[in-house]
Image (tube, rainbow, N blue to C red):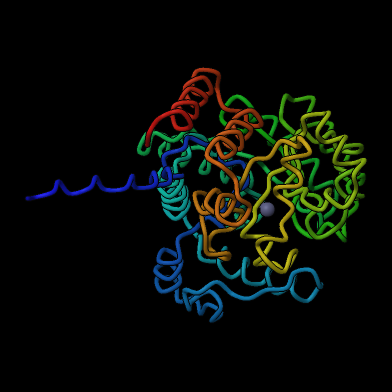
Length: 352
Ligand SMILES: [Zn+2]
């Protein structure tokens, strides 16, 4: 007699696709967002010989925790930046960054740019900002991604330059600039040297979003809070070394823009599991995952959420909380914010 074949054992539910989880991307640098293929094409067009670390297609090994390593990272970044020469190059960069973020599930991006880096080629600071903001509007139209711009000053330069940039940022606050940042080596420029620039930016309605707690320890994050009025901290991961600071971040709701792949690529932590993502999350610190410089670190936004799941054991519900925190820490307009929060709920509750 034929026996009915036993029912197939229930297959474990396939993991939800993190690319479908709506998220805000709050830590992405302009040149660092470039596709490798685009970099190679532009270098070829302009006859620029790229360092092998950039042309090989595999992310370079860097150790930015020592100054030589950081200097090498900056040299690579400068070489890539020298391939962006015209308004068309800028338009292409922003459109492709937006396409990549849409593919990763971002609905809102805040892209960080230091316009002084491009101003000599593009005819000055104001023309550069006009080109960047025009590129942003086109990319929004073409891809459906919402995009805000963060103007970032450079810690290695004179604070007066930062003030000029802060005034420029405020001038464009109604045209897409949403924040004011501070990048480059935390071990050099003191945060308080830039306090007046940040005061100008905050008075002009911009969010203060300086880098801190990446190459330097908790004291650097504290300076960002005390001297610059940070609403978010770029990285901020080294706060985990100081329980009192962690409590302060959690209580104040200041968001840390944690970039796990970047931290390992730059040697801030040896291994992915050493990034204190779980510790900060469980302590109640708000986190927005970011890719930082995909061109140099080899991974984009969705991969950061995949790392949270695979390396740090984040459940789907917890990934949903991370996505929600990225939205809450962003400058996304209200209508899109509501849509994103609803989409996150659906991703967590839905069956796929
Ligand atoms: Zn950064």
